[in-house]
Amino acid sequence: MVESISISTAARVVNRAKRQALARVSPVKRLAEMQHHRRLERHRPALPTIPVHHSDVVEALRANAIETMAIDDLGIPGTSELKDVLGQQVSALAARPVRGATTIEPSTTELFEDPALWRWGLSEPMLDLAENYLGMPARYYGAYVRREVADGQALDVRQWHRDIEDRTSLKILIWLNDVDEDGGPFAYLPVEKSDHAVETLRYVAGFVTDEEMRRVVPESEWRTCPGPRWTAVLADNCRLLHRATPPQAKDRYSVTFTWTTRHPVKTMPQEAMSADQVRRLTTGLTWRQFECLPIALQRQARG
Image (cartoon, rainbow, N blue to C red; front, side):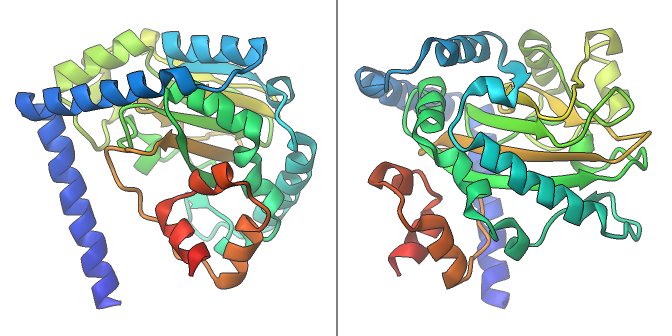
């Protein structure tokens, strides 16, 4: 346990130093950007062909870093099965007592019980879409289901922040119940406002309170994404300052899928899985799908 904690602490120190260097040290930042652009140019001819409706999504994301639609309209195989599994996850979370918690999540065992949930983000059309937006092969981090308790508290990710995994990323956030303005919708600042706030605040990482944000971007410029159940919010949270608005009227249920490039700025820690969980998640995957998995999971699967 001590060794595990030491490794985790060391990883955080390295990641923080890397972020600071990329943000503050101009020669380091320029070198990293040049390397990133070389990778994009080398991979451009190999980008997979995608259907027109996915090309429209990619263009919207490139322009605005966000797009909202019904999950069915994305046309990803396995969506019907995904809904069934998520319905079961919501029922299980709704039955749990709150006991002072702000966020309630399923256990690892519950999350990986049905591989249809985790594997949805590994379908070939989904990987094609992610790769076209990221500009290079994707790293997929799976599905995370959450119940946000309606307590009005602005804690943790309910405060303004930008994700720090990479220069660019793709997240798909799906509402598992109807979410109105009092139900804790996803909130964000448009790209140009996010850039302005980052520059003004000299932001690198961490959380920004509403009060601090109002000093640099008026609340009239803040945007939210309410919607009925099965609304999907596709966003690049590495480009947008965003937050989960604290629910006021009722608990919010959601699932989030995440993809980054395979050369992320931050190495994301991954919880070790049991041999049975690894088998459930990896059996039958194509070579491409396997290569999209987190490195730690690949190593576990290879034994």
